[in-house]
Structure formats: C-alpha cells, structure tokens
Image (cartoon, rainbow, N blue to C red; front, side):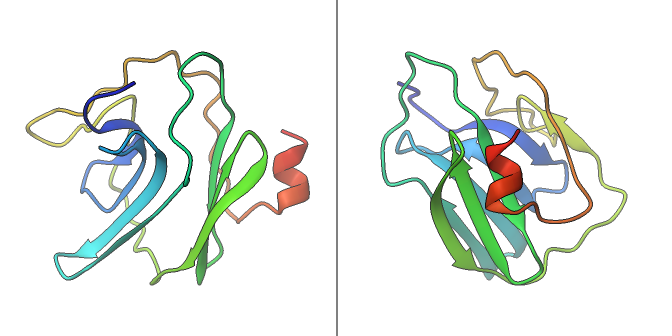
Length: 123
C-alpha cells in the first residue's frame, strides 16, 4: 500500500491530478485557486495485487471517477481552466518534482469531451 500521494496524471500548474491519495484510495483532485479545491475519491482502499482501469471525466459541471469501469465517485465541481500547461504522467512535474507513482502505466488517453459510462465500459 502506498504511504504517500502517488500521481498518475497531473497538470504542471497543480490544477488537476488523478492519483492515489494519502489514504490509499484512487482520487481525482482539482484546484482552481487556493480557496477553490476539491476531490472525489473511491471509498475502498487501493488493491495493489492486480491491474486497474482508471478513468475520470468532467462534463463542465460534474466530475466522475471510474475504477475498473464502475462509477465509484461523483461530485459537482467548478469549471476547470484549461490552457497550454503541460501534463505529467507518473508524477508531479512542477518543482519540487514529487509524488511519483511506483507503478506501470499503460495506454493513457485524453479526450476532448466527457465519455459516457457505456463508452468507458468499452475501453
């Protein structure tokens, strides 16, 4: 079980992260400004004995977190600002570089829209 945060996908400006949180759960975290941050997290602890399919969506109003094709968490969230800030796979790329995922990551996909639960089930 991880002992700290492990980021699997994050924006370099710190506004978005798909990660294992410090409680050992999959989570989707966003941070617009210091006073406007939130996260949704799976209620179950991470099972480190097998592969997992992880997906997070945001449709402009609601964030959803899917673990192994099953919707595990959902919440309303403010609009996420998107710009040319880069993405990092496997850690937090903004200084100081940290929160590296001790994992094998395969097949990272980004879409320009929120996928439906049926579309995620077919991935």
